[in-house]
Image (cartoon, rainbow, N blue to C red; front, side, top):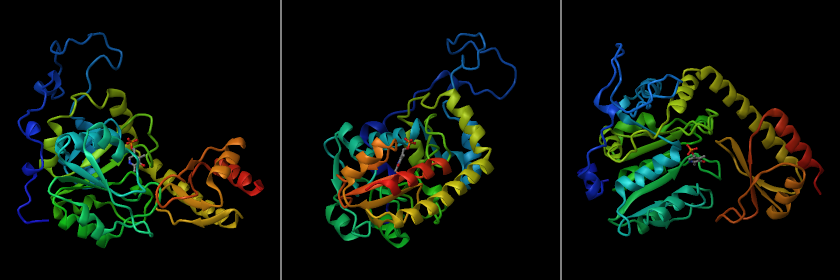
Length: 349
Ligand SMILES: *Cc1c(COP(=O)(O)O)cnc(C)c1O
């Protein structure tokens, strides 16, 4: 990246001119003292959720910031990381003019969001060993390339991208590099959060949906420089993270021991599943995984997928994805769910 990196040059013109919507809860921030709240047209009768939630989720952010070694101003929370990704498009990508770079086979939402936002999605296939193809990426980039999505560990392949390659991309790409770390808690390697100060164009997304076991509450995390977070905050809907989600999420992140023990259980099960899959006759290749799923190449993915369905096991058929012909993606379940999967796999002919 050129030394004159300036985030202001990446923000859409109309967004630059906006100031964030100022809600009642922004204009008067409670300091904990007994006040009578007659400012937001809420129903005054207590039921636990009669008040608007904190638009800046201060309680949750302060815990997350401490755990991740950053400050609250480096964090933006969303209704799942899918909302965070959409906010990135809408803050930085001018419809019909700008483009994004995504690296299939990868998470499908980058493409979906580019369609929704009328922003061109330039796809650059991963290499055969599922790493970003740096040369091909830079042959595809132009001055309108605003976002480069690096999903690491990647879904559906399960691998982390090489650190050297990512540093190369971060240092040379003039837009924002969005590292999607939905599966980072299952990986051997560290989060890129610790490198935030090195790369002004680094944006990291994380989620409570996978390792934290809270897909149902929808809580996504965006981590970046204060300037980037401030820009996204200009367009964030004020109450995008509801009260129940904030409460549940706070409880969960304060109980890291439970989260860690579930992760270690899932990792043990992943190793067990890998071993068993190697013995299954119709499995032709198993890809190493740094996530809570395993991608495997089988003889005939459509046939095996349907056989598994008949036996009551739903897996993800990834055969139509580039480089993923005849692959199935197996999420690691509980020990008893995995036992069932293994029994079924072993009896299929
Ligand atoms: C599951 C997944 C997400 C979705 O996160 P939510 O917070 O549930 O919206 C994001 N990125 C990747 C790569 C995923 O696999």
